Each structure stands twice: as structure tokens, then as C-alpha cells.
Length: 101
Image (cartoon, rainbow, N blue to C red; front, side, top):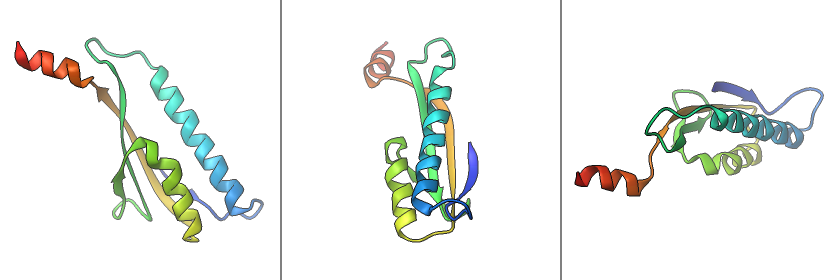
């Protein structure tokens, strides 16, 4: 998902719009995690970036998406860019076991 979200919409308060964006992100993550895992992959991991625009977006952890949206809302931004890309995730114990062989 690479998308620019508007926090200021004519028919909603910005706080309610932020809640709706958080819900959309949550649904997207749930949908991506349901996809079938390739062989030897432990879980779906995500690369996330958020910022005023694509060029100024900074890397964040997937768990920090909601708090960053709240910070942008409190900073009175009109819109922001959010990028979430799925990637293969491996448990650290498995990586160590593979490295020892």
C-alpha cells in the first residue's frame, strides 16, 4: 500500500477521519497476513514509511503506525503519505540454526 491520506475532509472531523484511516490500515494488514506463506517463511513482515510526502517519509515500525498518525493529526497536517510493503519474515532462532549448518 502506497497512499496519500487526507486528514481534512469536508464531511468529517479530523479525529474521526484519522480513526477511519487507522481502521483501513488495520484491515489492510489483516488481509496481507492472511495470504499463504511461501515455503520456509515464518510470517509476513512489513516495511513501513510515513511522512508529509513520499520523499520525506521516514522508516517506522509497523506497531508505531497508529501513534504516528495521531502525531500528524496533532500537528494539524492536511495530508500524509503512508507506505506499507509486505516482506518475508523469519524467526531469529531459525536464522541462527540455518547459519550454523
